Length: 394
Image (tube, rainbow, N blue to C red):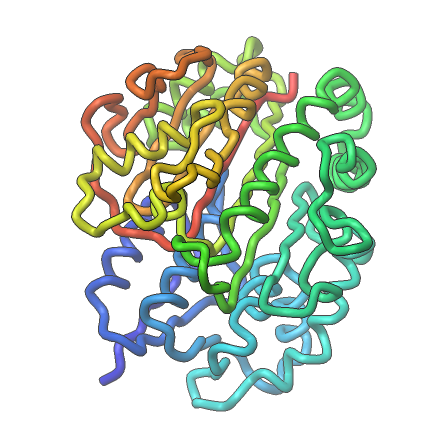
């Protein structure tokens, strides 16, 4: 019997990591069964699902199974006009067959809807999901269809300065904060420039480092990258009680001053299906025998200003420039999580503030599972990289 990885409707970060274990135990040509919609609470989860999808796509690619009645036209529309379904369809359209449990091919039922979602994202209009914005780029399509005008100039080159993103970010924030306009205006009036720099730097990394293999030789096909932003709203106790992660609990306790009032967090997640930080940074020096500590040390180098790749004879592959992101996130009392390769790490910039250093040993990164800053868990390998930032909207 052909093996199938089943994605549950309710997704958590813990469930995603369990699914990696099942994925790597499965055979080649494994199908993936996905629900019509997913439920999740917490940050980095939807783009975290995409990393799992990208890993399946590179390692085990089979059919995509969706439990759907071919006579339910509304279900096809709803799936296609949701960020979750749209990215799945657009990423795998040319690579995999979409079937239901009866084995019926589904693409023709989805086809009429996908162009609408493309247009909605292109104009930030229509029935886009509230309180979240996702703008994906698909390198396996033409520039016109695959590269979003929100991030790319008329000649399809990535916008060359952070200020070039100002207009795009203004419209994204306006759409994102439609239900909280006064609060958002107060907050973003003082932080707009730093947010532009953060988003620009993270997206620039995907443009420079995530479109080709780690040797910078072959274009990755298919290849998906994107920005996801979401406003999370709860009470302070709601945030604390809504997670089992001790690092997050500690961060939430330090983030908010009022116990009972509504609290708001802004999530900025940038994801890609590229080779991952470690492979891309090490280039030809990468090998599968690296220890998890060596992988973590490589990520630390990516977080240091001006670092260059140890691959490349002339050292022309620059570091990821995430030092600037850390510095700006520190000013916002933020939280950073990175999932790449076998690494799952975080840093709470309230309790572990930014320090300007060229010494990798002084770059604090904490293991997602244990909270240790010197002993790290070896996770199942993921294709691509997910960088998630969170900070309070006070």
